[in-house]
Image 1 (spheres, rainbow, N blue to C red):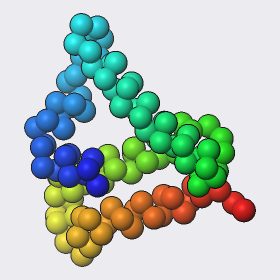
Image 2: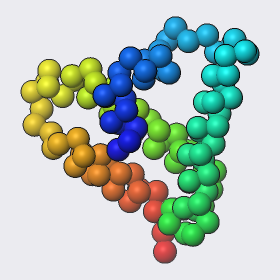
Image 3: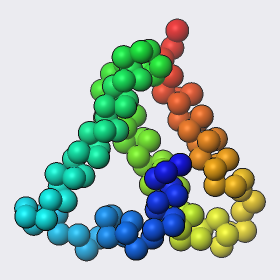
Image 4: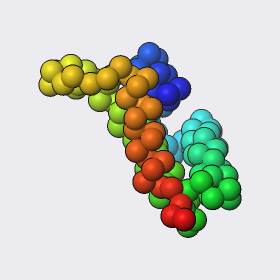
Length: 112
């Protein structure tokens, strides 16, 4: 929920972080290290869930990419007004994120 809130309420910051004009090759800016650290936090969270059997074992990269893609894509759709433009009747953002999280976790849950 924090990701979606930040992306939709701090749009300019979010665009600076993920905009197409970022020069990832500039070593002195620290963007790559910061991005790697943040993604590492997500990987660690997936590994923690795997360690306690909450989600299936395996490469943590795939569920991490799935989770990130979900919140990032949802954030972009909300911020760009896609749901409103299509006149879709969607639940409030908090409820929508909770539903998406449930679906993601259910799909990643360890069989047993």
